[in-house]
Image (cartoon, rainbow, N blue to C red; front, side, top):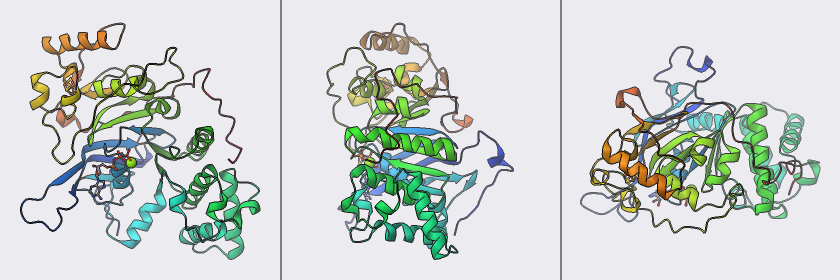
Length: 399
Ligand SMILES: Nc1ncnc2c1ncn2[C@@H]1O[C@H](COP(=O)(O)OP(=O)(O)OP(=O)(O)O)[C@@H](O)[C@H]1O
Ligand code: SF4
Ligand SMILES: [Mg+2]
């Protein structure tokens, strides 16, 4: 059952209150091959002390390279894995899923959209059958006629029209883009408040990605759902998401408004990600950089986990985990570069030269651990797409 342990009075009535949030969430898996071994178990530190808040009508991008723990974190929010420690809150109340009914309840509020739409459908069931099953689960009292109407409506909402052209088809008869729209329609059957989209377009042809992203954006704006957009592609975060959080080796290292994080990245890892990502708004395309290999999550580096790869690391970075430093405009970074001392100032100057920054950044305000977890604060707006970015005119065309 869903246990409501804390429900701050009128918490969900505040416009800026998160719909779904993770507070200090940690997930350690027993390392593969260790389950039946004697002696101390080795664990994979897939998520460590991650706090993040999702707000109605807003998109949060979660960016990081392969193996950084993005999918694990999305699955923790979806309650498909139990947390090792920390808590997940839905509208201010702690959610603890312990079985079928409570999982169904959480799933109807929080829907996961996966990267591979082909793998998420029964290949021998028609679209009508797949959607009927979803509609029955979430609208058990609907008559057969009402179910058909709901299915028509769901397909219309994802621009698969006319519905009858799709209902009798099998998954293999649809394109990747159409299947991803279908998985969004299936998710909509639950009338969720939150979508967790785990690399929703990375398996699709580049030409049809924009249409699916525009569809998700429209659903966020029209239905006020909160969306977590998990991606490797930090450039897409700038144009698609209001806020961006950057994950490295199971930990969040930087977050803030997407425009600030992508245009004025503070953490050396984010800076490396951006320097190695293609971006249509950059006049001169930098050659992709070799950004090295991520560390083992079984035995992650001490201090700052990025220190073995960081060109600005100091001795302290190898021993002491950096705290949160608040910067300007709601941006924060866990990085010793923003400490208020001479050594950090010298390293910030080196950083400015290395990345051609116009000026050396200021020290940040070290956040007191008692001030609560580092989550992003909603700020209005998101970046406009650059003039040469593809215009969002493909959404109505099922591809
Ligand atoms: N069930 C599991 N048991 C053990 N280890 C796991 C399990 N699921 C994930 N991991 C490990 O947790 C770490 C994070 O994996 P995760 O899939 O969350 O990363 P990711 O950022 O989503 O990567 P990608 O971008 O490749 O999808 C990896 O080291 C992975 O091997
Ligand atoms: S804390 Fe140190 S090692 Fe880590 S990113 Fe900052 S400068 Fe680099
Ligand atoms: Mg993943």
